[in-house]
Image (cartoon, rainbow, N blue to C red; front, side, top):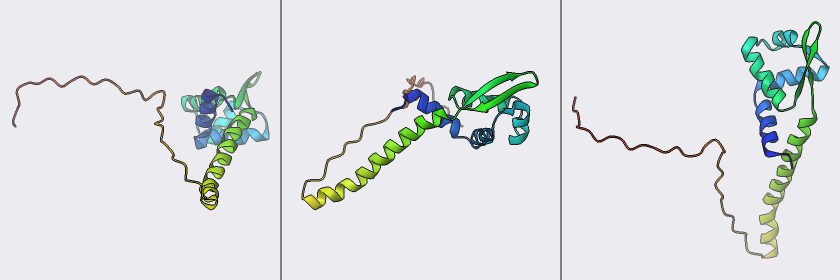
Length: 138
């Protein structure tokens, strides 16, 4: 299974249509950044943000050339994402078939418990109590 942080980076990079389009354009080979900006109609800081996410995920490589910076695609991280997706797809397929198999055999249906999932960035924030002051009626 892929590293969780790496998988997060890959899926985040592919979650945006502009970044997917950049990656698709790179299927054809190396492209100058200036040409990419024209192809996806994004310039300056916005393009740089997209490229930074693709770079962090390992989906692109930046190349310094005499005529400016160029980009090339690096499809290897797609294998990590595909492994995770295929494994989970198979598990879900087995899960959907399991109740039918169990019912046919007369075995009791399994009891599934829910485990809460917490995002690493979603820790609850402490709240300060509101001050109790005189009430104003307007």
